Structure formats: C-alpha cells, structure tokens
Length: 532
Image 1 (tube, rainbow, N blue to C red):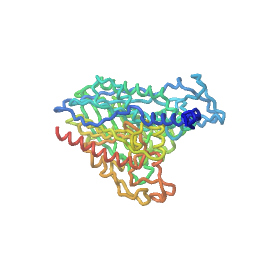
Image 2: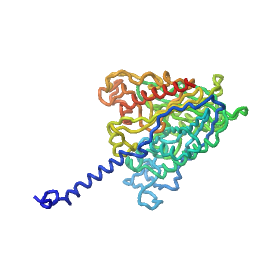
Image 3: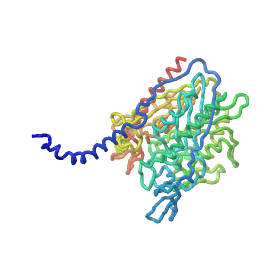
Image 4: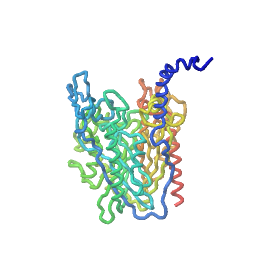
C-alpha cells in the first residue's frame, strides 16, 4: 500500500484539526506549570563577620493606594455594594474598553467593587545593618501575595544597595485590592488579576526598600513583650483547640544620645477584618488606628502620647482562625462596647492595641539590646498540593509554577537582630504549632499523634524575644496541624458541620513540612551563631 493510500495520509487534515486543540492545551499547561523564575532558589545562612558594631536602622514607606479615578465607577441601585447588572446596576466605562474595570476588594467573597478610600494603604520597610549583614523587612497592607511577585521585587532592587535579603509580610487585610486574583469580578475569575495595580505595588516595594537602606543611621534597640489579657477584648479563636497568639512583641529603635524614635516594630496575630464583608471602602482596618496611635498618640480618656517615628505592624499567626468578628471590643472610656462590624469597632481595637504597645515600651521591664548582631537565613521549599488547589496550580490560576510531585515553590526565613529572633511562615499558621497545644482529637482524618512538635516559638526559637511573621513571602492559606485535619465525618469536637479551615489550605502535609524545615533552618542559624 502506498503512502497516499494510507488512512493517516487520506485523513491528515481532519486528524490535524482534531489534534490541534489537544496540542494547544498541552502547550498551555506546560507553560503554566513551568511558571515564572523557574530556577530561583535560596538556601543560605549569613551571620556576618567579626564583632558587631553600632546597629544601623532605616525606615521608609511607599503609598500603595490605587488611584480610583483611573478605574471604572458604578451605579449601585440597591446599595448592596456589589455590581449586579441583573438588578439594574450600571457602570461608567471610563477607559472605553467595554468592560467593567473597578478595583476589586479582597476577602469575604467576590464582586466587591471599591467605592472609595477611607485611609491610605502602605508598604512600610525597615532596613537593619550590622557586622556586614543588611536585611530589609517590608510590611504590606494587602490580603496576601504569591511568591513569584516577591521574586520580581527582589530582582528589581539595585544590587549596589548591598542588601543581603528582603523579607515581605502581608497583613491579610480584608478591605484592600485583590492581589491574588481570586476575589475579582462578579464571579471568582482568577485570570482577572489587576496587573496595573500589581505593577504599582511592586514599584512601591522597591522604592520603600531603597529609601530605607539609603536612610540607615545609628540606632539603639529596646525590646518588650506584653501578654494581651483578657484576650476576649482583642481576638477570638473560632476553631478548637482554643489557642491564641497572646504575645504582643515590640521593638523600638532610637537615635543614640538624642533618644528620639526612628521606628517601632510590632508583631501580633489577628485577622484585620473588623468591618465585615459589606464595607465598600479601601482601608487598613484596625492596623490604621494602631499605627496612628503608636506614632501620634491616642486621645483621652485613658489615652497615651505617641512615640513619633514610623510604626511597622507585622502580622503574626492568624490561623485557627484569629478574628475579632465575634468579639466585643470595649472603648477605652470603659463604657462603650462594640460588637457590630463597623468603623467604631475597628478604631477601638486599633487604639486599644496602640495603648498596649506604648505601655509595654514604657514599662520598667523593657530591656536594651547590648549586642545587636544581624544575621539572616533563608530556604526555598517545595510544598505539596491537593484537591482544588492542585488543579488551580496546574492550570496556573493560583500560585503560578508547578514542580515535580505537584509541588509549588515557597520559602521560609530566619532573621536575628540581637536578642530578637524572627521566623517567617508563608501562610496563616495555627498558633498551636508555634506556642504548643497541638491535639489529636477523636474524628481526625489521619489517626496520628501530633506531628508539629516541639512548638516553634515556645521551644525551638532561642531569642529573648521571638516573633513569627505570617503570610511572609507567600500566601499558602491555613497551615493546619495534620493531626487536627478534618474534612470527613465524624467531625472533631462533636462539630455537626465540620470545622472551617481545610477549604483554604493547600494540603494536610503543609504543616509538617513547614515545621520540619523551620526546625532545621533555625538549627542551622543557631549553630552558625555559636561559632561566632
């Protein structure tokens, strides 16, 4: 039989037409799986050389508030703060592209177009330098950002600045632009990530880090820790076992001899979502009043004077989940109380926290760090995925880039500044993994004893003051102890509907991985410091 008489030859055009879509799909998937910055990895410990001298500190902030005049506005007929064309809502096509292009607010659900700005949003950076090591840390008013965006920012920072490492931490605010692409549009369409805003955000982070490094100046370092009690006034744990991030960790950097404040760095864990899902205005939530109170003071009654300088609030451990939605927040006047999700509650919570921070740093228990050596360690990890998160990652809809075994790239860091040790975690850590209290309750999906032991902050970290920065360099969702993972009945703690959390976690194996690798990286840091 000749080639011309063969079935393949006679039907080649049809076969090519049938095969083309499949070839295209495979090509698209291969591109999405590859992801950006394919070979980017970090794995190092840097404790510097020689004896540490005078600590240097610099701070800067860059505005990441979107200019709403460059986005579409809409006419909200029924006032539900959503765009529903079926209900008669219309929009103003200000950029003449035939599509509704607002700033979408992240958190609580999709279809939340911003109507205005209540307070500015910031990327706030602090740079520290000593014994030949320079580290920058950036606190971001965002819901969360995937790892690839931070790699872009690191690559854009001028190498001449001599920065050894940059750490980023999102606050997980639920009243800010969608920086993950999963809350945008009338329905959750992940491919609607607003590149205009992401470009603004990346430039702002580069600017903040650059300015902070250029403003490095001699500084003295003072530390304090305060336990928030009663905890009910500040935060609620909505899932058993009830374990809070109780420790309000504070650092103050002051100019030598003059004594004026350069910066106040604070870390504690609580979801900034006080205003609930119906608020249409962009805001930093209670973080705004916290920073204002620390910098400029809180008015009487029972107020405090501010420290000046810049306040940087780094998110702590918010898994569990740590929230004030179900909490009654008292006003500092001792009379008024706020439970409804509204502005007075957000203001009261932020001001109450500011008062606690100021009191902590004015207390006689404050200590001066006499040996402010700077050190940093970082490690790239490959985290497992499962369920819908695996499908989304494979398709490139969330967290672009897939590695062998359906894993995604992420990172942990350890920073040491004298008496302070900081561990960064790429998501929303359950506090029991850091402070103890992991359980293996009846009804668990995996019949195992607790895996994430010993607790990281309580027993593994060796600073006089230990901090855990959450949503750092990535956002992988809730980090749930594997022995507490529960998606199948009978449910743990006799919960008739099952616990909340697993639906927003990438895998039951994420927590064991992060715990194991954090212990290892902390051990490497401690061993290197012992050799100094």
